Length: 483
Ligand SMILES: *Cc1c(COP(=O)(O)O)cnc(C)c1O
Image (cartoon, rainbow, N blue to C red; front, side):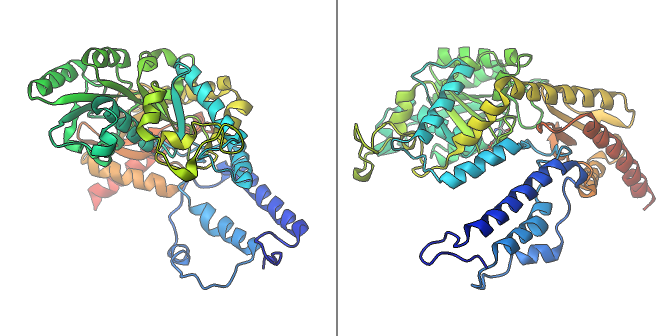
C-alpha cells in the first residue's frame, strides 16, 4: 500500500515513491520504443472488460499494483493510435517529448483560467506563434480548447455575436432572426453540432454540394446564399474545410473568403488537421485564403503530434472574441498588481474557467522538434499517401475510390457484393493487429479509409496494409462465394 504522510496524499517514503515513479516512466518509454512489436489493436477479452465494471470496494490499491493493472489491462487494449500501423480515423501518434511535457504539466498542476503566472504567458507565446503561422494580426486572439469540435462551436458563437450584436448574450436568439450558415456536404459533423448547441439549429446549416474533388461547389454556395436572402434569411457564417475528414479535400478557401467578404458574413476555416500543413512548405500554398479567415479551428493533437487533447481556436477580431465570452464576477476581479493581474485571461475567451496547461505540450513539441521537422512529418505522411495510391493503382485487385489530395486514401477490394465484403475486410484487418484502417462511404460505396497522420508510419506500414487487404480480400471473397 502507498504509505502517505499523516495528513496529506503525499508519500511518506519519497525514495520508494521515486523508484516506483522511475519504473513507470521506464515502462512507458519502453512501450513507445517497442511499439512496432505490438499489435496495433486487439479485441478486448471479456474478463478485462469485466474488471472495469466492478464497483469500488474501498480497499486502497498499492501504486505498483495499480500500475500493473495499467500495463496489463489498459495499455494493451487502447485503440492503438500511437502505433505506426494505425491509419483509422484522423488520430495523431503523440511523441515521447509530448508525454514528458504532460507529466511536467500534471506535476505543476497549473490552472490556466487566468491570473498572473508564466504558464499563461506560455499559452500567449504559442498564440503568438500561431498568429505568425497564419499571418494574423497582433490584435487577434487564440485559445487552447479540447479539440476542433469545441473550436468550431466557439467560432459559431462569435460569428453569432458579430451578426446580432452583443445583446444576443442577454436576449438569446429571437425567433424572428433567421440566421443561415453554410458549409460543404463533406464538412465535419461538429459544424452541425455547433449550430445545434449554439441554439441556431441544424436546419439553418446549408450543406453545399461538392465537386469531383470533394471541394465545396462555390457557385452553388453563391446560389444558395442568394436564395436565402430572397427568402428573408440572414446569412452569417461560412465554414470552409482545410482537409475534409473523409478524403482530405481542401476547399477553395480564397474564393470562399471572397464570397464571405462580399456577402459580409463570417469566414471560418475548419482546419482540424489540415491547417497545420502551413508548416509544410510543399503543402502550405494549397491553403491560400486561410490567412483571410475570421476564425480558424485546428488541433495540435492530429498532424501536430501533441498528445490528446490540444485543440485551438484563432480569431481575427480579438475584441469581439472577448466580448462574446467575458463575464463579470466579483471572485474573478482583476487587479493591476498581485496575482489577479494580467487581464484579459484565457477564461475570458471561452466557456471554460478552470483549464489545464495544454499549451505546455504544444510548446515543448514546437520548441524541441522545431517547426521545420514538424512540417516534414506532415509532408511525409502526404508522400506516403501518394505511395499508397500508386500501389493501389498498380494492383488489379484494388480500386481507388477518391482523389488523394493530402494524407487520406479511400479504396476497396474489387469483388462482387463489394460493400459487404469490404466491411468484413476492415474488421479482419483490425482484428489481425497488423494494420488498422477505418471506413467511410464514398458516393454511396463502402470504402476502406487509411488516414496517415502518425509520424511513425513508413512505407513498410503501407505495404502491410495493401498486402493484408489483398490477402483478406481473397480469403473473404472466396469464402463468401463457397458458403
Ligand atoms: C477531427 C476533425 C474534427 C473534430 O476535431 P476534434 O478535435 O476531434 O474535436 C473536425 N473537423 C475535421 C475536419 C476533423 O478532421
